[in-house]
Length: 305
Ligand SMILES: Cc1cc2nc3c(=O)[nH]c(=O)nc-3n(C[C@H](O)[C@H](O)[C@H](O)COP(=O)(O)OP(=O)(O)OC[C@H]3O[C@@H](n4cnc5c(N)ncnc54)[C@H](O)[C@@H]3O)c2cc1C
Image (cartoon, rainbow, N blue to C red; front, side, top):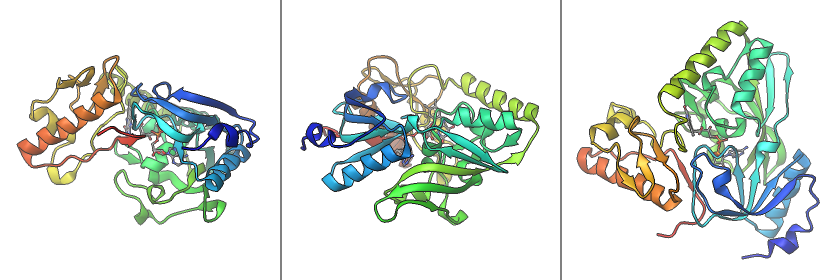
């Protein structure tokens, strides 16, 4: 433990700082205990100051986007949680779109549509920050975030603030090179190509309506819980359904009736309920099929075994 209050007073920030802020307010599962300190950087300088403070004082730092792929523990998170949603400026430079990591994907897509350029429209309706989408190498409707990645501005311990780019081979299904870097994605430069605004809007509407119809927004969730695995031939949701696990529950955590790979918080679920249910599904699928499904959702914080 460290006395963050005393040390924290030494950081001069423009952005907001909240103490014991419930993570349930910042995750799409709507669960999670308190973040000991949550910082909303107003500028890149703020982010740099927080990051430097954590390095110098050996304070754990967690980077939060939209919290759409996370299961945050009921115990919460020690140290500093940097909520990047306030770092959300952007600009076009010719055919490049430079977006700060906290910009929402929906806003990014709308900005590109207004300019008449294609980039991330397949991702419309996916709750995500720009940083989170590239960190996860998000995938929707046959498109991967990596396809439009040009370079990123990253903050890390070795080089401070600097630009990175990667060969195509560094990316694969739900794997990004950022997952092996300790740094924070500050800004992403995205490739765009001219496209008719109406055509873009049609793709956005189609994908958004498909998500609506698939029940993505019915109850708090984190999208797909398990990755798909080609070796298992069918998508994880189909396998879970075939194992008869739709409707399986732990407290108020339930495998949704409408999609085997979506687990929902029907109201009042704890993070422990959700985690136990995920582990239950994993075990039952393994027992019935021999397939070990790999979680896509990320567990953060401390967990009581
Ligand atoms: C209804 C619903 C539908 C979904 N549909 C899809 C889908 O179709 N396809 C898909 O791939 N996913 C989907 N997801 C999952 C989720 O939307 C994506 O994984 C999304 O990209 C996560 O982004 P985020 O900003 O919420 O990241 P978070 O969940 O906040 O963070 C995820 C990870 O990224 C790290 N991270 C985030 N930002 C940064 C940064 N700037 N620098 C360094 N690390 C960072 C975090 O530390 C964490 O480890 C869905 C989720 C929901 C709730």
